[in-house]
Amino acid sequence: GEDGTIQGIFEHIQIPYVGSGVLGSSVNMDKEFSKRLLRERGLPIAEFIVFEKGEVPSYEDVSRKLGNAVFVKPASLGSSVGISMVENKDQYVQAVKDAFTYDTKIIVERRVKGREIECSVLGGENPIASLPGEIIPRKGFYSYDAKYLDEDGAELVVPAKLDDNMIEEIKFIAVKAFKVLGCFGLARVDFFLVEDSKIIINELNTIPGFTQMSMYPKLWEVSGIPQHELVGRLIEIAVERFETLRKLRRFYI
Image 1 (tube, rainbow, N blue to C red):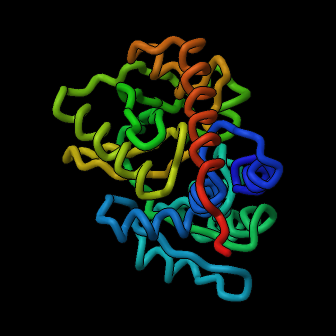
Image 2 (tube, rainbow, N blue to C red):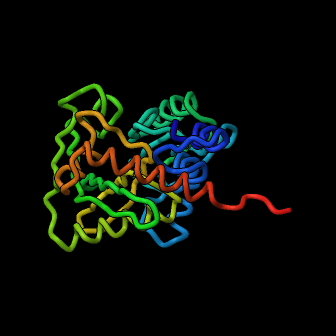
């Protein structure tokens, strides 16, 4: 539902929908393309390498470039599905095998040690950012189980305990990343905040969760937009885009 496929169907049959369009959805679904675009526009990301089957680098080559501790991820999945934290050769071999069961392309990233910060973005042409929140995983990293199945998998600190300057910088970068990657309507921007106060973008999620444990609505709640109003705004933004696009000339005779 977030790779651009269903968005294309909705556009073809002319039904308004909430969230990013075909391009924004597909770009954000592919971690390689989204990271390259962010890097090209000067936004901070963790070092990474990409490979497909038949070109898998050795753990020794990976560790020389990225360090011994890395994350192995399928290139085009969300919710931390198929992600493994790796610290040795045996773990790396198994992680690559696992990731290839979900995708034909794999991302390996340098493991960044820092606070996990999230920021919600809302809007169309002039998006706004919420107060940031912090996730404190209790079991290694913020896995699929911790997000959706284990209520004690992580502590959510909303809003995050940050000084005003850092809050404004995170909000600024979140909105910029949202625009660079062609997002629309809503997205959650995930960051790492390392010890020297450097901000690193982890990824963007164009269809963030709306469960009781989800950060996106929680962050807007503390930013002054309750969930019922948030849903209303998302619908209004979607309808406005639909009406705008419908008036455009898409052909020439």
